[in-house]
Amino acid sequence: MRLISTLAVLLIGLAVWPAHAQEAVTKRVQFAAGQSGATMSGRIKGYESVHYLLGAMAGQRMTVELTASSASAYFNIFAPGDRPGESTALFIGTTSGSRFEGILPASGDYLVQVFLVRSAARRDETADYDLMFRIASP
Image (cartoon, rainbow, N blue to C red; front, side):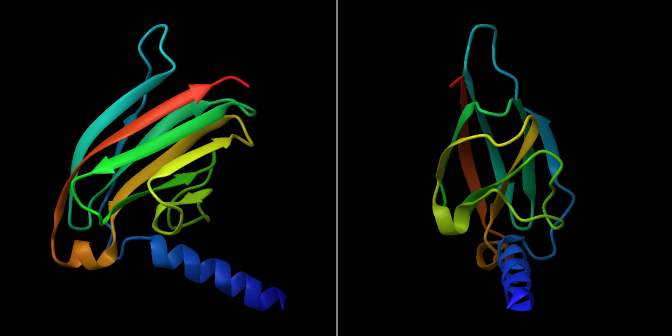
């Protein structure tokens, strides 16, 4: 039974990881003074992905919402220390949608990965997007 559970987790991780992933661009999310949120805009094409790092504390409420020009654009969220291709995501956009809201389990840098699903990446599609981040204290 344990083997089946482990295999299921690995298969889910592989299903959401863009095949032939190129080197990801990494950007730090910083809020303007006195603000509790920010919006980052960008464009992804084919197998590209963009990683956003957002520092937060355990117990804070984080909201992330993606608005994109393509229904094939998604995001995953990884807990501090976890990375795409190495760890299971805390939030998987392809199965959970374009909005995450939750209480954070740990302090550190959360990684938000924006990507196109494999079928769109194979067709070398492009998506413009806005990614809204908000952090609130409990």
